[in-house]
Length: 180
Ligand SMILES: CC(C)(COP(=O)(O)OP(=O)(O)OC[C@H]1O[C@@H](n2cnc3c(N)ncnc32)[C@H](O)[C@@H]1OP(=O)(O)O)[C@@H](O)C(=O)NCCC(=O)NCCS
View 1 (spheres, rainbow, N blue to C red):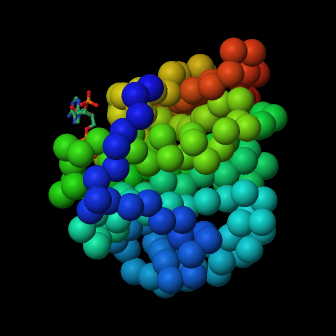
View 2: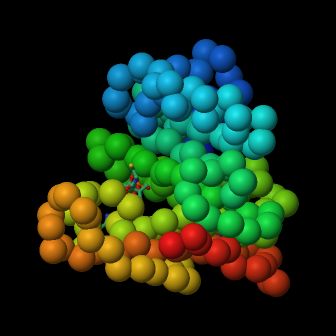
């Protein structure tokens, strides 16, 4: 993976470590700053265990985010030793075209040098615009397991696939497992 140069108008801030940006821990990028009880409880437990939420600031605005944690501190049912689960990555459409997604991903990988690999989820044929498989593949993740699902209430009868997406960074990395 090529190393991206960050321009002078761009910086990455760890909202879990810099108090000025703490309020960003409670929102994606654009939603209100309100702290939901469950999120506050989750953060209290996982920040000491290595959870990070980073923001990409471009010309003074937060336009991208990446959130990750060791498997035991992630909210996904993913298991494995010395692996990092990417809970979320998101770059606003208005900031597209700068490869900010890759810059955030590389920042995570540089910060987590002891990890044997990185893992996340992806969706196919889902009605939401989120976690599209091709986007996670473009970032370097590969599918290693999947399951087909239907929502109990919404879009009844529309089956979609959930993928376990893996990016090992060491030769003998043991792939993660998922509690389906
Ligand atoms: C994945 C994501 C982070 C990438 O954002 P980004 O870095 O700003 O993307 P860019 O516009 O700079 O494009 C990155 C690459 O994807 C390619 N790309 C962008 N849109 C594309 C499309 N529609 N089809 C094919 N390739 C595309 C670009 O050409 C570029 O390729 P290159 O690296 O070979 O030059 C962003 O699309 C995103 O946030 N998606 C939603 C992720 C999500 O669902 N998060 C969960 C939120 S709850």
